Image 1 (cartoon, rainbow, N blue to C red):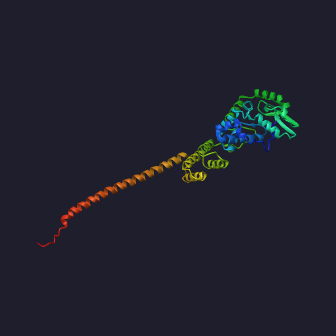
Image 2 (cartoon, rainbow, N blue to C red):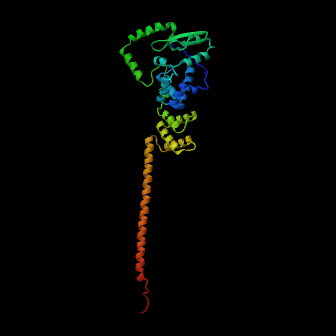
Image 3 (cartoon, one colour):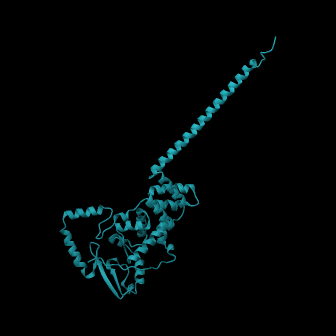
Length: 326
C-alpha cells in the first residue's frame, strides 16, 4: 500500500520564550544564531508534514539547500538537537525521523477538531489519552520503512521477508550501488541539478557572523546570489577583503570587488592571487626604475658641477685681455 499522506498544520504554536529553553540555548551556544534558525526551520517543516519528518539523505540535501546552510554544519546541528533531547534519539536511530514528545502533543492538540487523523503506531511517544480525535486511522511501519494499514502489517512483513530471501545477488549489488550514490533512488523522479549543495556557503556565513555580526535573511540571500553567479571560494575571498576595508556598505563593496574580478576574467582565488602578485611586481619595478633614474640624475649633477669648476679655473687665464698693447 502506498504511503498515506500526512496532514500537516497551517500554523503551530511557538512560545515567546523558546530561546530561554535549556536545550535551545545549548544548540545556540554551539552554533550561534544559525543553530537557532535551523531549529525553527525544522519545526516549521515537521508541522507542515505532520508530527514527524523523514530525515533521509535526500531530505538533508534538500533542506540544506532551502535554508542556505552547509550540509555538514546542518547535520552537526541536528545531531546536537538529538543529543540534547530536542528530537527523540531512539526513533531517529531506528526510523530516521525527527519528532519528540512535545512536538506530538502540540500537533494533536492543534488538530483535535479534525474528524479523521492518521498516526503511525511505531512513531508514537504520547498516550492515547492525549489524542481526542473522533476517528483515528492507525497504521504501522513494515521492515522496509513503508507505512501500511495496521491489519496488513504482519502479512506484509511476511511477504517482504519471503521476497527478500528470493532476491538474487544482482539485486544486492544494485542496492549497494544505490547506497553509494549521492542521492538515493526513490519512486519519484528527482531533478538532481536542483539539489546541488555548495559546501562553502556555510563557511561564508560563519565568517560573516564571526567578523561582522548575526546574519540576516536578506544578506544570506545576497550571498547565495553571489555564489550562484561566481563560486563560494571567490565570494569568501571578496568578503574577507571587504571586511578588512571596513566600507560603509559592505554588500555594495563586495559586489564591486566581484564585478571587478569578473571583468578581468578572474574566476578562482588562485587567479586573484596571481593577478595581485603581478601588480605588486609591476609596482616594485616602477619604484626601482624611479630610484635608478634619481641616482643617475644625482651623478650627472655632480659631473656637471665638476665641469663647471674646471671651466672656471680654466677661464682665469682666458679672461685676460689679450688685446692689450705693449
